[in-house]
Image (tube, rainbow over all chains, first blue to last red):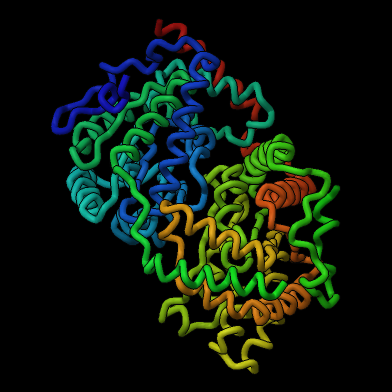
Length: 281
Length: 281
């Protein structure tokens, strides 16, 4: 199954999370069954990233969004670890600083977009400007309702400069979120991850779902599609995302760059050095 | 063998690469023999990095230097891949831009030092200011000879702010460099890596060795030691570096941070949510 087709939010169409199944796991029934396929996709992805880095003609921007406990950090640790940190930069966007708030909402985002040859990963992103800022009324509707268009224009500009954009929405059910909150409580090593806002935000679940629907419906474009990843099963989420990234890199038809030098001339320099090394012995 | 002891350049003592064996490989005789140990060290390193990231009380700066083809990129791809890109940032310092040249030599370096919880890797570094700039007379001796002290002071300041510093000098022999240049010529996929300067720089081999001796002798300090890694065998280099990084992280005694919330109060919130979820069904 090509997950790019299966999980694409159709550009230009309204979108409803209510129609999606967060628990989908294709024909696999467990992590152990899926693991060989996950490993294969991660390896493919890593090898292709090395080519992207060498070629320096394309770049890749990966955007991760999802409600609390949806697995954004998990994707960074378990999927993106398949990429070398040379050429893969993860940026976690937190609550904006006072300086950042004094600028337009893309000001703090733009410096982190990927250079040619690189992969940038946004753990949360510019989309917070139409999510938390909308749900908490941090800005009036008159402001946030224009941001979808601003975002589409921004992403279009990146795409025209050689950046491929993949946006993953990690979709978990409300029950699954609660289960994960419980798991954290059961594990003292993860108590530091717990915050009271986990619960106050959960109380706004429906508001977030409405904001996600709009975000995905309005900003899934031909040049920067949203993929809605069933994420109740962490292993299926990892499989789907690694396959989509690997397929996307594969389609770039990455090739080693042309040499900058006359290889025949270099062969002569090399031969002279070999002769010199022999003589010195 | 603890490679931190074996390959440490003794702080405060003069240093001579001529006394080191670039071909050393301990009791291992091949990559396949060493691979299980390399894999084990990489896994240890990766697990400890996750703890470093969670804890956010320490940071780690890894500096990589070595002559052309010594394997700086190889370490980034094969060793540092053991770390998750969430919290590990590699920065490759290239020829300074005009703007960078208009500032003191640490101006372009400082923004890339690691935040608490993070690992920063410098592929080349501030040490170029006492290497290429010295060897090519880009700055007068009156300028570069004071830089060792400036560097030691800078690194001391980082260490006082919670940054552990590991500096790896990848040492290959002159014969091994030539062999690697030949390997690149034999592999069309790597022709783009070849530059004429490979050969013009090689002609200054002895000048570089003198510059390295001074750099290591003057800047291996208690707070930021240089490790001179025998690197003729790529697999031994990877083994030594991964073990040194893992041992260093281990010694930090990393612990999960204290929770920011009253866990008992959160358990009540959780129980209320579970009850509500049951009622809603």
